[in-house]
Length: 88
Image (cartoon, rainbow, N blue to C red; front, side, top):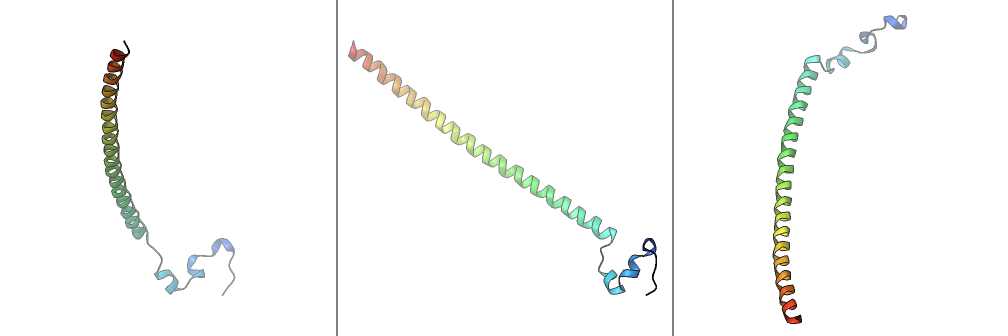
């Protein structure tokens, strides 16, 4: 191999044809990038749907708890009213 100044060394000087045949082309990278973009978009949509479902479940449970508390408050109010009547 003939010595060249470093700024003149090319990839072909460093690699064989077999090495170069497996390199990705710009088109390969573009396609991969598009696939990744599509996958990320799909994952984002799935995440939004699952998060929305989880939030709805939580809100439903909170609503049930609030309804039970209202019911208990009514029972407690009646008990207090009865005990006031008994105490008087």
